[in-house]
Image 1: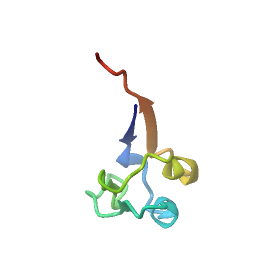
Image 2: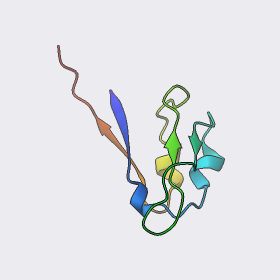
Image 3: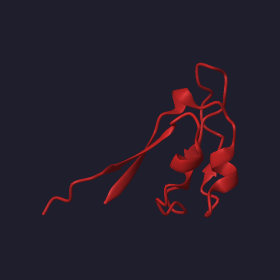
Length: 71
């Protein structure tokens, strides 16, 4: 199973992730980062972990990691 991590301090509010998310799960309404930009918030109910945000983000704000499934 994959999990998305967000590194908001790198965000420059270019909105590529917002414009390209196929499920419209991302909004730039998070806290203002140190550079003065609003940060992304992802709605986990809408997000399908497709990786589009990771692909289009020029600032490496998104990271996907594999979670180990505990049995």
